[in-house]
Image (cartoon, rainbow, N blue to C red; front, side):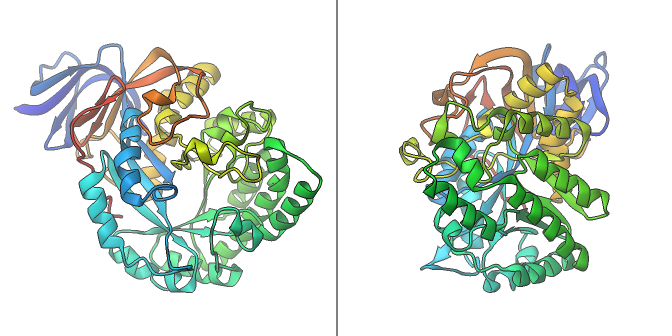
Length: 452
């Protein structure tokens, strides 16, 4: 029996069953079999993966396409960067306005068409729930393939003005939304920062003349996030909803997440690569401005420990293609957000696997398998036969210095520029087709919309 592709000589790493030396065969875009190394396998294309690790392609559950560019423009540029970084599937938080006000996402068919025509990897969506008109459509969106949505406990009043957002979702509407999410067995993604505390803190810190990343951390204190985590868990428990806590970046917030989960709440925890690499003392300054902010060196180590011990379930990038021109100012005026997809896997390999002993199986879990399970993506995040042949081949010993010019993003910088990382993807495969090889995109867009 002949296959389309056979990957030989590699060290296969699966989130569930771990590692084995084996040959992986692909037919019609799906994994068709796994064979012992000494079993002959006939294929039209044979890829020699000797000395490489073969993992499920990275799934990034947290990006923001359409933030600084249009959605279609971000698909064309940022999915190229994803492919270079070993990312084969993306879930993007989409929020747009008609005029000045949030409105239902009637443009979903056009968004799907954009994905199917412009993306180099597969892309699905979460919608931002900013108004009652959007919350009322949750069941409809589910029927159309979008089963997870984001609720912002932050960004009301002056806080919202910092990101140009109109957010009408108070706790009452949040509770209604959580009930609707529970009814479809979906997932409520929560940006947990107490907007009233942040509004007051920002005013006081700015008036005190504080500057830099440490000032931004003081303006959006970890306590405001930890408080909201406990509160949203209480609300979610009332309606039996599942909550996914996005971008957790502090010890205090992680402890709050552990507390509510240990108390029986259905809570998943995500961190981001910048909370694993940067602190408020990092020399990059406003380039690393993000919400919630980067914190202390002790917080960095707490998040690594959470990833390794299972307290943190996933890593999402919060990738925003914000140009450098929007960052080169003081901390109060700089735009929040920056790119990160192309360097997430190298960060986990270099700082997690090599430096802190994180197993490759655990890397595969937090970068792929867990996200597929949480967000109902049954054909993704695994090496089992029948799954989509979404793969990344990794040279664990390849050391490279990060240079944004190599990352194929619209962005003209990386907050990791100049840093050496050990362990890089050398081939990215989407549904059996190589989309990036040795750091370069190959071929034309072949991404498909991920219906969930």
